[in-house]
Every structure is written in C-alpha cells, then in structure tokens.
Image: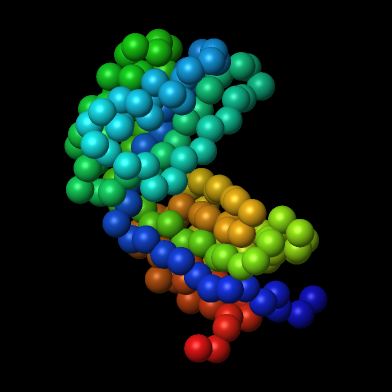
Length: 159
C-alpha cells in the first residue's frame, strides 16, 4: 500500500494524563469531572470516556503539566464524590496527532498510524479521533520517535 497523504502533524509535549477509572455508570459522570476542572480554571486538552463490559465508566483527560497538582486534587475529589473509583496519573505525556481533510471519509489512515507506532515499540496510552484528526497520547520520552516515525509513514505537504 502506498503512503497516505495527510495535512500535517500536531504535537504537544506539555501534558499530563489523568484517568478516573471504574466509576459506576450513570448520567453526569463526565459532567461532574469537567465542571470541577472548569471551576478550578483548568482546561482539558484531550478527553475520552468509555463504559466497560461491567458497566463502569472510565474518563481520561490531559491537562497542561503545570496544572497537574490542581487537576490531580480535582480528580481525586471527583472520585470520592462519584464513588468506587480509582485515579491514575501519567505526569509526562505528549499528544501526537495527524490531521487532514475528511478523515472519516478516507479509510486506511488510522491503521498505518497505529501500526507504525507499534512497530517502533511506542505504547499508545489513549486515542481520540474527530472528522479530521487522529490523536494519540504517548509517553513524553517517546514523542520524538513518534513524530519521526509518523513523518516517514505519511506523505506530508511540502511548504
């Protein structure tokens, strides 16, 4: 298969990843977490949520590393209010994303990204997609490798 053309690569090396795990599923779980972050003036730069096969919510989000202490406090307090959960923290992560027009209409973009990172032994901590972007969270120490690999995997515009 020939390399896929993309619009470019985005990267943010200033992040920490927090996960609020195993929350009993019910409406408003994500709202409570993100309302509490907002009240502290903390922006989430990445967010995902899923429900496991046992009906528990898992919410993961990235914040700027400089707000990690506040965000950790908020996550732990939220966990206490929501009940039955656990907080995990990866204090030094990076987001690495590829973007381009209409990714959802172009099959075959996510697999080469994930395969290239896997072949290099880079573990993906979280994935999020949109109509035009595929974002991965990786350990900060592997961010340079991840960017180099994606630059060799995809065709980038020549500016």
